[in-house]
Length: 493
Image 1 (cartoon, rainbow, N blue to C red):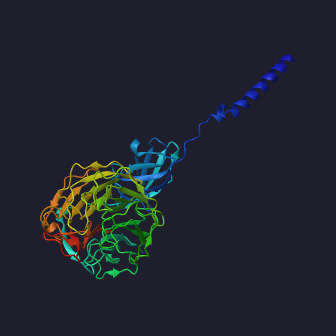
Image 2 (tube, rainbow, N blue to C red):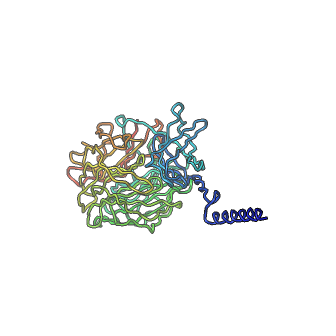
């Protein structure tokens, strides 16, 4: 009887001890480590229809990626490639991975699509489609130039941009503002853009002009390939700039937004963003990259150049979010320089570091070339490129295309035409190679500054890019030079 009582007491003690351990988190059930989360991709390149060439990085945004690198899988048909990014390129919410060309034996079909997934110890993420585009090669030394449909009137300080149409073979050019020799204008012009670089026979004056006159502003474009806007949407931005031609430099802090109808090129009503620039600027540069609008440089009130760099997210309806002032400012304050983004890096080329009281005047710049990382609106530390430009250019144009970049026109030391164009290439490490000058038939012989210029979104029939140059003021040894209405484009290669 005593033995039975002892056994019953031991059973009761063990039962109560198990209950206590369970309540305190002990025991095998309570001590089990929760499984790692299954990774989830939110988007690639902060865009609705992500597009990227092979050999360049993509930004994968999401959650549950964990702290340590897993792998990114790229699949097209039977070709499956795993990429393991560096630890510095991996976080729980973001990954930067270079798109492979293939598996080493068979290359992906380009143009085409690949399915992208993230694989961790938590499992495999949802798949997101990435559009692969060609990385074209062309020889700037083989360029030839011609003219196409001229602007309705001669203008300088205008801005122009190309907008992709509703098909892969349609596009439009949009021109905003400018100085016509008497006053700054509110005019908005549109025209069709052909794949060979020519324009339609007639310019259309939009029934939706700018709310106020602008010149020496910045201009950028967002669509579903570079932002999280709805598929098929197109938006253009007119940023800062000078309102009246008699205004002192410093310009405005306004940001105007309008839609562009992809099927017709029609411009919608302009709206003023409630998120204005942190300061009034004229002669700044702007670009859109992976869902963010970047603005840098320019003249502030008092005609003083700034080294400020700003970024703002582009919302799904084309509006912009709150501006962030980068802690990593340009090493040299400058206005009327040029900026572009390639391979996850943002570049600043030349610009005028001097105080300037007349944006239409001829003022030379410097030869500085800087670059920094640009990731989700955050700008890294700027580095001085080992190869500076040949000419101290300001108020010029920039043509970045498929790893090559042409800096041209503008004002610089020397005779007009002596340094009209120079070209460089982006190296594998992100630096720019030595600059080489172009002369003769390889340049348009326009010799203008404060012109509009852009790279066409269409590929030419010879599978090469097309560059357009619009208006501007003649660079002259006896200023002021005449205003131009000419529109140039490269006819070759």
